[in-house]
Image (cartoon, rainbow, N blue to C red; front, side):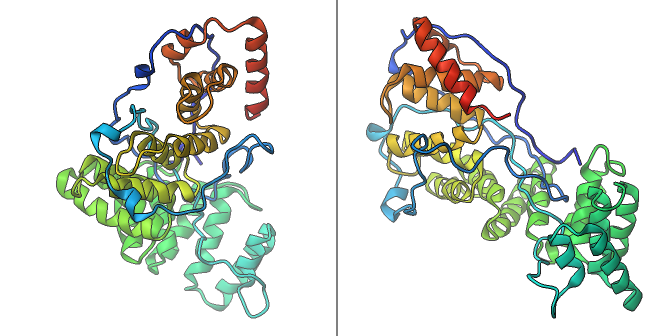
Length: 383
């Protein structure tokens, strides 16, 4: 299913040039709140690529949470030269319609959802049909059948038929069904884009406590609701963030950073970016690393920032790859290593993120150094 689901940019290759600029070339401006990408209703695939880099190649996660004293804004005299903030769109968490209805075993539990979890999709359909024979108002069974149709799991993919099943469940006030209909109404290739209808379904689901619906509704309000809408969006994002949706934590952090719908609070923003990062959100990692490098709402720590940039870079984030290249090119937060810088620069440029400063900084690399950098980039690139 396309439309609301966010993806990373396509890749392309660029050349390298010479190291001549001063460290001040690292200075960039903070980007404004980016446009929204909504949570998809279907169960989407996880990030391409492993959770960890090859042994010895990745700086590990820091296990310690932010200490209270680290949330104090750094003084201007202590601030590091700033990096740019992440400039990608708000991300899309992986959240199936059926989340929260899982069961471990069929005994004494839900046979239909147990079969779905185990990948026995035709069995799940038959068990859901059996449930509906016994109870024609079984909204959860209707929603499960809609999920099977929308994903084409055991049944031919059919958005119209999925919408019919979701609509039946929504009439019975099933929040997951309202959420699914909302995402279908946002998709370009679903049942017809209708933002107003999507908003109504998200409102119904959010009122029932559905956290992903709160997130999607917040993004609609941020796009259409003005300042009053931003305040309501912040409230909804707080609910989703409290439910540990990392993309909601990232989005709420952006609001606190910009002072939109809430009072501007750099320390609060950085703490939210940290939560998003620890929950695996790539944009949250980049925002947190940026804040830590710059000392925005937290004590500056270039090595800690480099560690988070490295994690996101290994997971394929172009902005993180670019920042890690700058770190290695100028020895800020990690050892200066022009071959490492060149390899990460190639990977970022391959995704369309060019940087003339790095082209210039690296243009005097020898043929042997370039060959090593290219080999590293090939090894680190996802298929």
